Amino acid sequence: MEKGTGFMDRWILLCDLDAFFAAVEVLDQPHLKGKPVIVGGMGPRGVVATCSYEARAAGVHSAMSTAKARELCPQGVFLPPRPQRYREKSQEVFAIFRRFALMIEPRSIDEAYLEVDGDGPEMAKAIQEAVVRETGLSLAIGGGANKVVAKIASQLAKPGGIFWIPQEKAAEILAPLPAGMLPGVGPKTEALLRKEGYATIGDLQKASRERLQALLGERAGQSLWEKAAGQGPEFLDAPVPPKSVSVEETFPFDIPYSQVPSELRKLSRQLAKRLQGRRVKGHTLALKIRFPSFQTLTRQTASPQGLQDEEEIFSLARRLFEIHMVRGQYPRRVRLLGLRVNQLKKDEGKGRQLTFFPLLRPDDPFAGALPEESRGEGFPP
Ligand SMILES: [Mg+2]
Image (cartoon, rainbow, N blue to C red; front, top):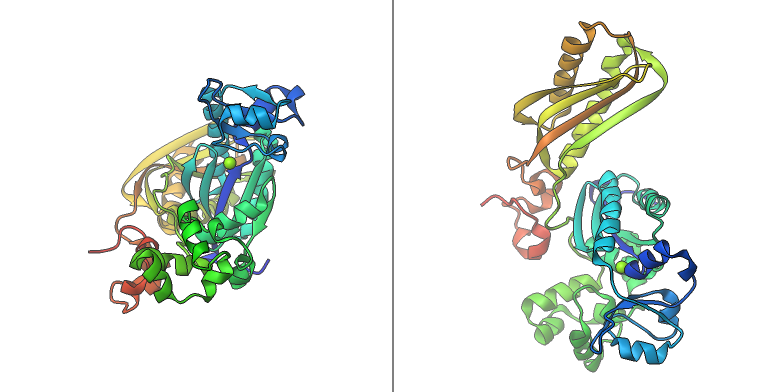
C-alpha cells in the first residue's frame, strides 16, 4: 500500500460490527451459529433490530416488521433484544479501538470512525484481529484518507473484511456504486437524484456543481458534488478525549540502569507523538518501572503547564527516574519501563489546522472556499 495519500499519514477508518445484536446472541448461544437469527420487538408492532446474514438471505432486514420477517423466514430464531449485554460487548470493542486510535468518533453502539496514523491498512488489520480474537465478534473496516471514502469502503468490506480506498483511485472505485451509498444521501434524496438521471456516483461525478446546487440547495449540492469525487472531512468530529495516554516497553532482556535514559527518550518520543496526534496536553506524568523480580513501582509528578513536547516529557521522566529509582535501594536492572500522562486537557494553544492543515490558515485565500465541516474545531476567531 502506497503511503502519503492521507494527510501526514493519518487515516480514517470506519469500523462497523457485522450484524451486531445477532452476532452477540450467536456468541452467547453457539448452537445458533449458521441459523437465521432475528433480534427485534416480539409484540404485534415489533420491528427487526438486527438479523444474521442467514436471515438476510431470506429477505429479512432491519426496520422490517417482525410479522413480515416471520412470513419471509418462518424457520428463523426470533429473540428479544438484550440491551445491557450489547452495551457490555460494545464497551469491550471500543476499549480495543482506544488502544489503536488517535481519536474516535462513535456513530452508534456498533460503529465508529477511528483516526489512526502510520500504515493505515496494517492498522486496520491489527484492529480487526484484536476485535475478533478478544471479543469473538466480526468487524468490517473501511479505510481511506477521509470520512466519505472510509464510510463507503466499510460497506464494501461487509461482512468481516477490510476494504481500502486509495485517494487517487477514489473517483474510479466510487463511480459504479449507487448514489445512495454516499453518506448523507437517504432514500428521499436518492429517489430525487434517480429521477434526475443520477443513479450512480459516476453520474454525479459528471454533473456540474451548479446543477447539483440548483437541485439540492447551495450547501447540500456543494457537499454532494465533493463527496461524489471522493472528498470529505479528513478529521473527526466530536472526538472522545482519552482519559490517559501511555506507552510502555517490556525488554527482551533486562536492561542495566545505564541504558534507561535512552529508553526513556524513545518512550518520550512515542508519547509526545500520541499526545500531539490527539491534540491534548497531559498534566501529570507517571513513570512505571518493573524489576526482574516483577516488583513494579509507579512514581508520578505534576506538570502545571501541560506536557506534549518530547523534550519536556523526557526531562521530567528522567528526573523521576533519578530521584526515585537511582537513589532508592532497588535492583540495578529493569524488565519494563512505561510512561503515562493523565489529566488530559485539550490543547487550546495550537489550532490543529495551524499544525496539521496549513492550507487552512486564516489568511489563506482558499479557506473560505472549503466546506464548513472540513475546517475542524479551534479555529482562531
Ligand atoms: Mg453494524
